[in-house]
Image (cartoon, rainbow, N blue to C red; front, side, top):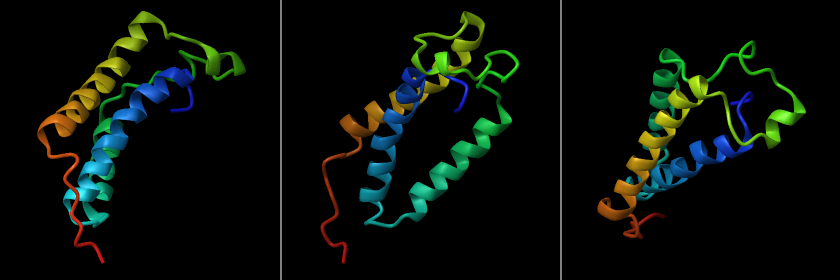
Length: 105
């Protein structure tokens, strides 16, 4: 995620915190499901290219403070962010997000 604006990184990573937290809590404090989700996400996002190439969006200091990407490059990235956001919203409202397993040693 080195060649996207910082704002886009936040939009991508923020929903992950809810999903990982929910997986960790619902599995009784086991990391295996969170690690598994991370591995599956990395594998699927490696198969489908959604990040712009360095040749399309060069890595410069200006990129960090940029608020947008070119329209043809931002669409796929924001679609992936949208999917993770919908999953995070579902987890928070329907996944018993606040119900924590207190039997963790």
